Length: 563
Ligand code: SER
Image (cartoon, rainbow, N blue to C red; front, top):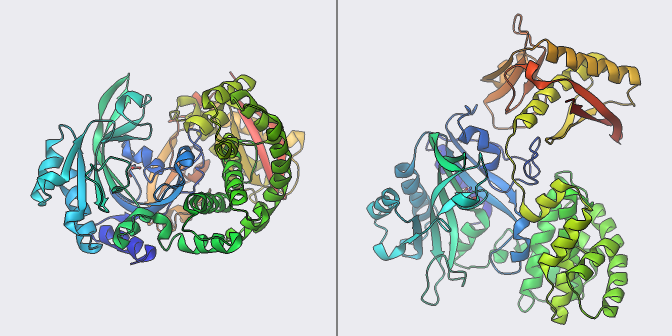
């Protein structure tokens, strides 16, 4: 059974249980200032787990490509990757534990044919209900393990005490595959057990520092496709599944070395190049900011590993299915820097955090690259000291550093929601002033400003900018009502809803109309998942601060809400 077959079986299994298949989100989330990457299948669904109605109903299934920058240091063994595909099914306040656990068991044992005695499960201490369900499925007592919240609680930020205000989460129950080996327990990192699926019962939200029950009880299941194949193959090495074999073979060819004996280096190259290619396909370019910087770190770390294997850095671009040029250019730039940096390193006696920071400043060596080069020399660098230096210099923006070092999570704050509604008004106002050839090309909102990209062939004149600004401010003053509707795709098209829309499986869609409404006409009507303010009056006046070119035929506007 290969990855394609397992993916198909999973989707079919849950569609057979009345789930609707939804399209995966982009790896780089649109309109979400709180995070740099989509790192789990539930992330794009947060508003619906909180209670908003999903256009496709209460049971959803998909396969979501995910990227976890925070796992970059873990890569280099047979199981960790920064990029992976997560099979997910969700109940939005519909079914709960007594359906979810038997279904997952049925999928793993019947559909994938995994032997029952090789499956172990874990349950949160005190979660009797899950325990009884596993027992009723004839999971043996010695195959059920209890752990505390450090292992059997899931939220995007970890156990309850780490959850920021507004974050959602709950107890979970994991399934592990036993590859055999020393006497051990499922949550040990020795390699005997591999977690292949996690059912999270999302039923709490952090509110005023405490856990509060959500209005609905949700299920959020995630299973790593790479790991499921490893279990089906009964081989713990995810890099020997059909998803990685071709890239490993290519690396062997380029370096003229064998995977056996060079596993760790090749695992890093394979993972990082796969992740980098996916980010580039999603529109990210190597840079010194945000996602672009993470991409640069991946490419540079892969380059250092390539150098350790004696391979040609430039040939890394051959590992990309597309966008070879982007990688080639970055490698050409980096190979010069790498040589210069290496000479410099020779001169430094002891690499402390400060020296590591200087190498970053002068040669653009990401922290992991310096660390990698000194592991070769047997030196340990103090990461905390590097971070302190880094923060002192504040080279990158506050968001960038929190994104890079903490995977930063904020909430859907009031001001961000105001900016989001203002973006809809801006989109329509641009079409009113410049013409209906204007279309959204991208959007990015933070608590400080909105940024909106749109198609237009030339620079806007000062008077056009002023007109657009006045029009948006008029619509805010008019205190228009904002209405959320879930309609069929045909209806939405008949109503002339505009905006980015790429949900290829959708029957029902979510749209937002901003009044006045007369005979079904709104001032603005867009495909959008929200959230938005209820009346435009609360936004406050906006000010367009900048208009510039992004690329040929695409312009960018920055605007602020004036205080
Ligand atoms: N969100 C959970 C996880 O990432 C289950 O999908 O493990």
